[in-house]
Every structure is written in C-alpha cells, then in structure tokens.
Length: 388
Image (tube, rainbow, N blue to C red; front, side):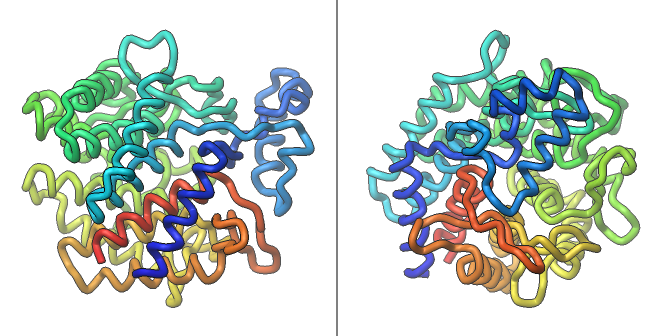
C-alpha cells in the first residue's frame, strides 16, 4: 500500500505542476486545422476524431491541439484529494480538493438554468455532436459526485445546494426518451437521440439518491428507481449490459468501464437507500464482469470478446468497482489490488509520474492523457488506499 500511495502522490503532484491541463481522448477537433478541414461534415469530424484517438503516437501537438482542463478530470482529481484527506486528515489535501471544486463552480456550462458541465472539446460521436463545454449528463454527474463527496466531508451547505441544482438539471433539463410508471430513460445530451445510453441511466440515478439522502425529495428517489429499472431490466440472460438500447445503435458491446460504472451505480443505490431489490442483479453482473472483462493477472480486457487493447481506464474502473464491492465482500479487495498492480507494472511511467494510455498486442500507446489516464487512476488508487 505504501508504494501505491507514493505513486498516487507522484501522479497528483505531476498533474498539479501542469495545472491539471492535458490532452483528452476525443479532443482532435480542438485542432483548428482539423476542425476547419471537416467542412462541418459529421463523418469527417468523426473520422478525424477516431484517427487521433486510435493513433499509437500522440499527434495532437502536430495539429495544434493545446492542453486544457477537462471538467470531468478536475472532478476526478478533486475526489482523489478528498479520499486522501479522509485517510490522512491532512488539511492540505482538503484545500486542494476545494480549490478544484471552486474552479468547477466558477466554470459551469454557460446559459443554462441549472448547474451543469460539458467536455472541453468538440465531440462528434455516431449519435450526436457536442460543442465545447455544451453540457451532458455524464460530465455533470461526475461533478455532482464531487460536490456530494465534498459536502459529506465538510458539511458546507454550498456544496449540497450546488448538488441540488445538478439534480434539477438531470430531472428537468435533460430530454426524457422513455417514461412509464415503472421505467424512465433520459438523454445523454440536451437533445433527443435515437438510442438510450444504459450506463447513463444508472450514473444519474446513483447521484439522485445521494442528493435524496440529504434532502428527502421524494421525486428524486422515484426517478432514480425508474431509471435503474430501465437499465437493470435490459441486462442479458447472461448478466451483461450493452452500451445502448437498442444494442445495434453502438459498436460498443459489453465493454469494461461502462459495465463497471453500471455495477457501481447499482451498489451505491443499495448503500444509500437500503433497498435490496437490485442486489442479486448486482452480484450476478459483478461475477460476469470479473470473469469476462479481466485477465487472470488483472489486465483489463477491452470488451468481453476482444482482449486488446488493455486500456488504463479499464484498470481504473476495475479498481473502483472491486473496491466498492469489497465493502460488502472483503474477499474481493485482492481483485482490486491485482488490477492496480498490473496497471502500475505495465502502464505507469516512473520518469514522468503518469500513466500511459493503453497497451496493444504489438504496440503501446506510450503517452498520457490527463483525464483519461491520470485523473481516473488517481481517483481509483485513492479509494483503494483508503479501503486498504
């Protein structure tokens, strides 16, 4: 644990020296050249984004992409500091966390009725186009999680009030794609799209129940349950989840980190409410995750039917997911430690105090992305250290 803690501190110090600015996985269109050469065409934007994302060499500097702060990454770093404060009671960690959260509160997506955030790049997916800092559910949820974590650590009401505003964004601002007495599904972005992103329903639901825990607003609990119902009810008969509903709307099938995120949201719902209606689905899904999305040595598989590349985000997600599971079954903590050990051995760059992007069968993506690699691993290792 001491070695892990030292690596965590080195990663945080290296990120701080860069002001937490770096490159992001999908930031190709932050290049003024590639953005102009896309000619406002969806498929050209998508192709440029994929080429830069999949290149084993970091082409971003060549195309004029500049390092910048990613709000999701800032939220992840803030939570890492909060976990360290809980472990050490060192006020310096709390001060760093609060400084990052204050930056987030000072830089929400502009022009919105409630607090929300988006990525620091133009993002073209097959489902939608998002402008820089245009709000979406996932970035907003990660900031909301940092706000709740800060409130529970400090009891400062400003963090809870901000989290309540985030809850209103989820409940009232995001378009509703499906609504019934028992199920509800919301869009990822501020427009209706042709597919439901399944992990999005669970992530937002988990945050809503955390807000409900402090405000007791019945609407939040009802919506959270219906959104969880939507995703849990769409698990396969072998206890896995596709990325989208319907499944054919995305090339992603049963992948590592989205599966882990669904499992985390389900167990957090149980922890916040004591309602065990989803608990068997959770344990069945966790066993599928363990058996099908990790190698025996802790390496994170890309998808259930595709081993490579071993992506650092999968490592971070696995550490988090099995650390959370270990709160209810302590025999699972060694699984989290094994995943961390593999990531440190294979993807930690000691000279730079950061983590490399991914390891393929024949080639290594030997460069680092601030949010995708270092913010996620800092968040993961900090929770693991606290658990150990």
